[in-house]
Length: 287
Image (cartoon, rainbow, N blue to C red; front, side, top):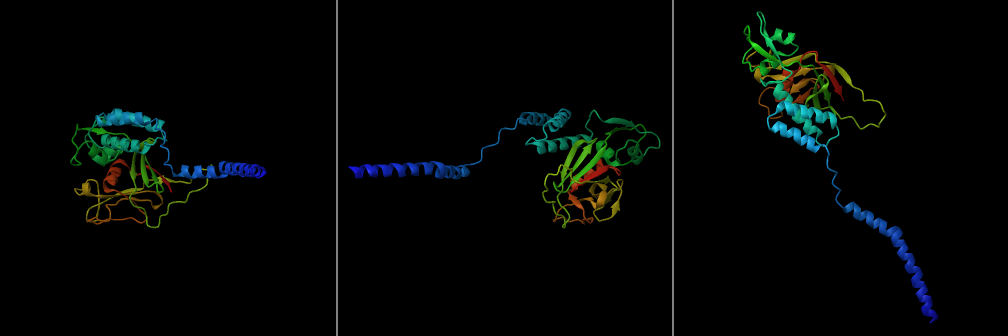
């Protein structure tokens, strides 16, 4: 009988110890391992999505001015939205669709051609570019007629180039206008390593566009009024050798003039930038 009691006590003592050892050490470890195997919880729904979808619906309905306003407000109010880049891309397409076409917009002004006016002089007087006037008025040539009505889009463009993010962003009066992806960087470029938060802003280089250059398919320099200009490859020369250039990709069949330390963009994007930007526009380089 005593032996049975002693055996019972031994089982009770060691069994209790094993139980608490399992509860305190083994089970938490096991639960942690099982938790790691679970799929991540889906993020909470983005509360800004209904506002974004409403703006996109306006765009699909062809209501460009209303969609532009809605997207501008969305970007200003929701900088951390999960669809902020999509919103910027939509807004960029709308902005260039309006600016580089005959579409009417509240900001466009009418200029009446006077005696002695030539396209370059009108562009300088209205602080725009000859290319922009031609595209926004659907002109097939540079000749103007006295009394001709031209739609002018007053713009105050500036450029922000981020090599790290591989983006070129156009601002109009300091607000977002359109962003373009950089498709090729210089071979020696290395993205800066992540730095510790110091509370100080990252250093930037600032300057202005110093020159716009157009090259014919044969590699010759041409002007905006040359007949080959619609097929031109473009350079936009700015500070510290960060020249933007048309990069048609490795399968190009035409000659490509590539500047040293250039930043390549798609040819259609460079054609837009050449129409929008002027010599003297401010440039900020973010490495």
